[in-house]
Picture 1 (cartoon, helix red, strand yellow):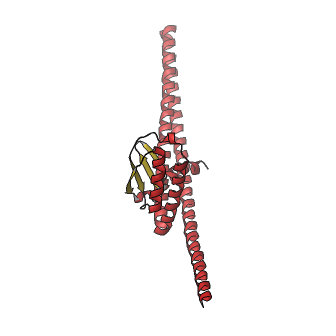
Picture 2: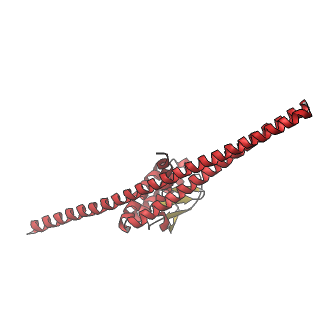
Picture 3: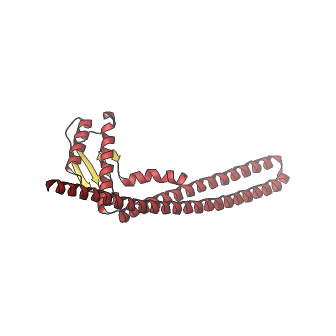
Length: 239
């Protein structure tokens, strides 16, 4: 009887694991599909950006051509005023044309950087919202725990010389409350790096979705999901 009960418990446990994995992968596939849609939206916006840059480039070229024509007209009119005056005006026209070209390049560069930044910020916000509303709280906590474990391992591998700030209080910002073992391990590692006992000032920021941010004075270690998305979005755009 005891053996049958044990077998029943094992089978029940296996079924629960299979069911949980099925639900997790189902949510993961949904999230990946949404990420794909988001990537396609970003590609569409990038195409729109390229068209806008091309249009701006054509406008700048037209302005440059207009400036060159005006400069040529001035040069031709001033030839009658003498060779010295002609050279002076010609030089001035060249400088004006170069100025127009430089201004056009600067404006194009500012426009490109501004649009890229806007696209990146929009993509990050959409990704965070998608994860927030697609994944269950249990799934987000699981992801959060994985990110924290990885960050703590990375902190443990850092050289002591990196911890140049002398602080006794360390600010820790996380999307979910730290578990006791996570808090103890993090405190021990940072205390070892700083070579003194420290206190963790904990804060909760649900906008991080997952992960952890550690602030040791001016030294900040950002292991949040939001920061990871900031780093990966530019690579997705290039691909």
